[in-house]
Every structure is written in structure tokens, then in C-alpha cells.
Image (cartoon, rainbow, N blue to C red; front, side, top):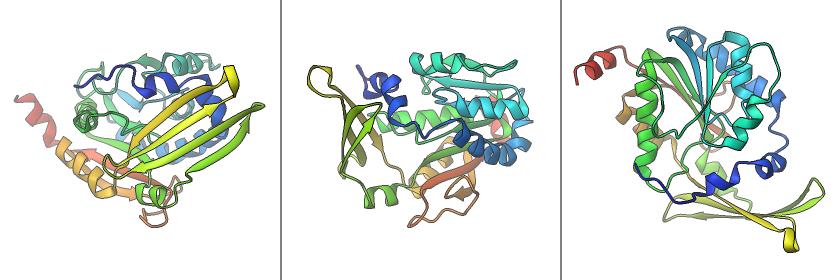
Length: 262
């Protein structure tokens, strides 16, 4: 496993990130979680724990999933985002865990379902680390369990990339520059917030994956892709039109016997 020194995601996912994307709110999360819960409930019930929300951020999806079925764990690397998650009010809330997704602190076969929302994948410099994440997901799933991954549709995003965007957030000027690097297959963004001595600069760098590539990663990790959706309304994936690429994959029952014999 490659551990980067001061990777961009260690700095970016905090208060500034939350301020930049106010539309990513609890209402949106509930709508998406309703689709996920209906789709994955039969798989989730197979596990001692129902759901792992992998890279849960402030916990908006984890809370919505927990309200429907219970036994949900939200995991993220960002202490600042998890602090926001723990502040959520209510009589019963998910468990919150801080960890790197490449080495998950749970026993094999702990979960009936794992979900990974909003392109929280493709961050690492080494592509082998992305493959490691999918293998870890497979390890955590109970035989017959399911993994739902959600990334942006690479072909649509790259083809219509807004290279420059300027807007005002909480009274401050925000300038965003984006570029696609075909050699690394990454969308790189530089976000400038504020001006003068108060100016702060952040970066995003996300590796784009096509449907074929993601299917291959899943297959290599021991998962079988059952369906591909283009959004959280259940429409089939269309690489020319869909905003999202959402894959539903399952772990075979025979996988447990193979793992146990190693």
C-alpha cells in the first residue's frame, strides 16, 4: 500500500469543501438513500451489520440509511467531516469510524452491503491502491452481499469539462480551474477561495474510470456486476447521457469457502 505525504484529500475535505457545495444537503441524501435502501435491503439483511457507508463525509447518507434499517457504520478519513457527522441529532445514529479505506478495520464478512457515494474513489496516486479498496470491500461482505459504487460518468464529464468557473460562496470569491490530463487519466482542479492575504488554494485530483474499467476491477476482486445505473432514479447507464455511473455488484457464496481455505 502506498501512503502519500500530505495528499490533497487530507487538506481539502473540511469547512471549505462544505461551503463550496451547499446543494449536497440532507434532502438530496434522503432521496438517494431511499433508492439505495430499496435496492440493497435484501443484501443488507444478510449481514450482522447492515451497511458500511465507505467515505461517508458528514454522514448524511449513513443517517438516512440507518433511519430505515439500523446497523449502519459510517467511515471516513477526514476527522473534520466526522466531527460534523457526530454532531447530528437523534435518538439513534450510525457508528462513526475514522480509517483509510485501503485497510478497513473490520472482520471479514461483517457487512451485508457496502456503499460508496459521490465519486469517493480514484483519489490515490497508485492505481494498485484503488484495486486494494475493492478487494477490501469484497473481504468485508458476507457471501451474497452487495457493493454499490457511485462515480461520475467519465465520458460525459471529460467531454463537457468546465475549465474555468467563478462564483461567490458565503460572500467570498471562489475561482476553480479544471483540466483533464489524458496521460494520467485524471481530472485535476485548483480551487482558490478568497483573495489577498486571506486566499486559500486547494486541489482535487480524481482518476476517471470507464464502465469497462470498473467492471474489470470488480471482477478481479471477486465481485460480479449485476446492474449499471445512470442515476439514483434507476435509469440504465448510458455512457453518452448519464450523469452518474452506479454499479451494483455482489459477492458469490462460493467466495467464502475460497477465502477460508487460504
